[in-house]
Amino acid sequence: MTLDALAEALPRLSFFAIAAETPVVILDGVVFYLVDKPNAGKCYFVCEGDRYALARGQSLADIERQYLSLFARVLDQYKARYLCQVVDKRIQTAQEMKRKLAESNVVAFLATQLIPKLIELDGGQAQFDEQRQMRRDQAVRTLLAAKAEPLPKAGSILEQSVGANAMILDEKIYPLVRIAAPGQGADLIVRAGGAFFGLSPQCQLLAEVEAAFRTARLPEFLERQALAEAPDRTRILREIELQELEMAEYLQGVIGTSSQKGDRCLYQNKEWGILKQGGVFYVYVQVPEYVIEDKDGSLYRFDATRVGVPVTSCAADQVLVSGRAVMLTPYEHMFVASVAIGASICMPKGDAYFAALQRMPLREALCAYLKDAKETLRAGHHAGNPNSPYHRIKSFSHRRITRQEANEKRLPIFPFYRGSGAVSFIQPDDDD
Image: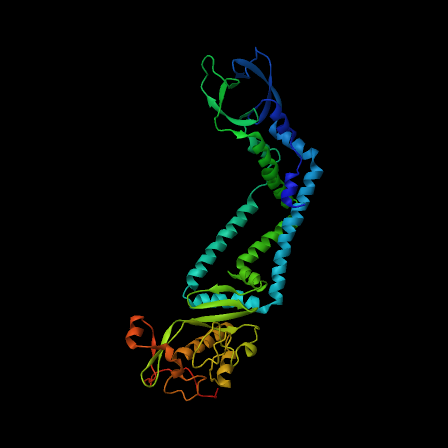
């Protein structure tokens, strides 16, 4: 049985059944029942010209304590089920999260190292750190406040439900409002000693109040009582909550995405991102639309795309090797073998280049590798590059564009002839 169903099945408090059958007055948390005595004394109720005496009964607190005592075994079962279904499950989930992190270095790397690095490259690290610290501080304050909050005393939740001063009449609960001495013939008046009360027009259905008591206020009280009675579980819960505050911003999303099927975007900013494609995580860089100049001055426009590197390991010598930079969209280009997704980029880099990358922190090396791959596409076609491409640029005649059109679209143009100070992104160490 679920916890909600168990709350629905909690025993009914007899007070509500009695109040549904006979009028009840509540004054300062004490229950009074109507007695047909026309010449009543200082406490009475006037209705349609008839005067009824108020006979004192139990306090709401006593009624509640008797209920908790009478049904202690059933209520303890609810508390035990709450600890099992909610608290223990919460603890188990957190432990499972830690286990997944321990088993998947890639997931931990993406969450705790690479995403913060991509945020930093996007120029938002300072703001990200500030916002995260603010959330952490607020959460800590909330945790400390919850820890300091005292457990409600038994005997208070029934009064919170029906009110300390109220009239229950015709299965409705009316708050009692203090009024001046009523005039002759006044109707629906409660007198308590020298004070007079009238019925507020703002009433609630008795059945709704009872339902809220049994399915909301009472379960909440029992759950807090269960935690108070299980200090070890409470301590573990608080430790979990504080540990989660220290985890990376996107940790939960990484773990969730890692276990889900299909292509999913894990993180994205205006230039960088991480996605899961074909069951593999890729870190990628956006390549905006651009124009390349050929040696005869003709211009060719190339589409925007994404270049990615699959992160299947945290070992640099497995991730940072030749041919790992691939296209994440169908793409035609001189330095791309085919139009298929996953086609590699021709980057004739020697062993020294990859050895240098492998000596860097993996998060830094991945970004550096992707920047070079991006610039290979955009700026690799130039007079200083002796390597033969997969395709001749003139085979992309359908991509021709005029200089005026490129300028009107504000597209960057990468020239074929460059001055001595120009950067050559492709090093002629090897042939394709």
